[in-house]
Length: 111
Image 1: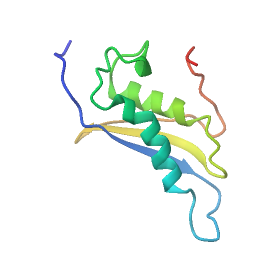
Image 2 (image 1 turned 180 degrees about the vertical axis):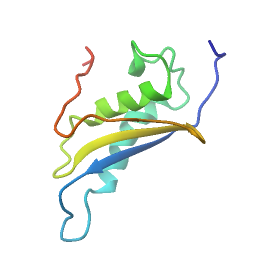
Image 3 (image 1 turned 180 degrees about the horizontal axis):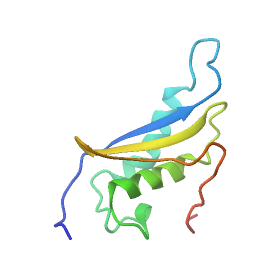
Image 4 (image 1 turned 90 degrees about the horizontal axis):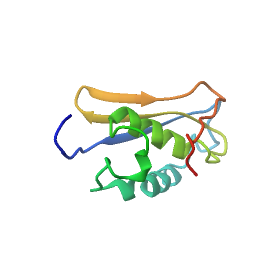
């Protein structure tokens, strides 16, 4: 097991949709940013070994991608669908969590 250390993760939300709006957009990125802030701000500077966000999972890049996906999946994207969440831990170290189109993830017993 590694000693306690910090990460500067980069999280990317990947959306898919069949068409763009008349203005040429798939989604309002202000909405995406608001939701990402809501999900990720409580994790900033937190010890993920002890944080409820990853309860039952190790504090890995893969687990973070899965939990962020689960937090975003129930949202009403108003057209596009959530295709995946990519998390980059360091150059060359990344994970993408996704589900097939139309599939929903369970919340693994979380509210």
